[in-house]
Image (cartoon, rainbow, N blue to C red):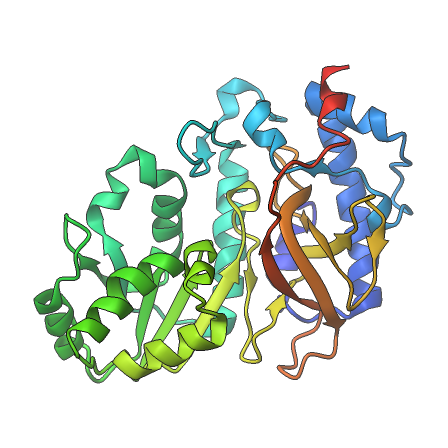
Length: 357
């Protein structure tokens, strides 16, 4: 972000449509030119679009790349010596993971933006933290890619970090009970991945008929819903069930991907995902035409964070719908939206071939 200091000192949901679009057009056009100049593979893709790269271009006319290109190509806009770390997605068996190249500046910006966004929902203070996962996740290179990065990212908001699952990924009740007793007068932050919280926490408590006193808990969870959808568990059911076994009332789902780490989309109290001043989305149909409010299609995501790799404008493999802008009952400005899940056959054709020409 060129105006990073200014934006990082600004409330993350405070720009209305006009102000935000003006800022985004300038910042994202500049990012596009930066990556064209510094990433040869991206330059080939963008030239295939034959688009205007001036600051006056509409967001829907900016070039984008399908998210799966990060599995096919090494896309980076920095020299090898400046690579601070490489993030990898959790690819399914036999599938090549995405590789995201981060320099120190982007790594620091990711943390600052994540801090601004998370503080809006849990407050500015660090809270005692119960992680619904096993500590071994941080030692396992296979799971560290996404889960480990998520745990580390959100751990900065917690104190007395305690893992609820043992080395065998089983719920360890004595550890949890000792943690809750120690912090019974305090608000508590819980973090976990959606399916793990359901399978390893909720289901075990339900089967054992155990009710935990976590009515002061704030749960942040993210990750795929595929396993839960297969069990006919929707978002409302998820929240209701966790309230039943642990009394947790404040539950915030988030949507994001490793290709745009940091600029995640939190779900507000009314069940809507929100864009911030650091991010935006548009919806596209199968012919790649942009759609309006209330129309379902593929989600294209924008982020101001990625300067070390061309991840500022990517087409996801998720279906979604913009519900409105600047008028969510929660009071936060910006677009708010809903996600319907992953497309059945996640193959986006059109610009992936351009990289080879």
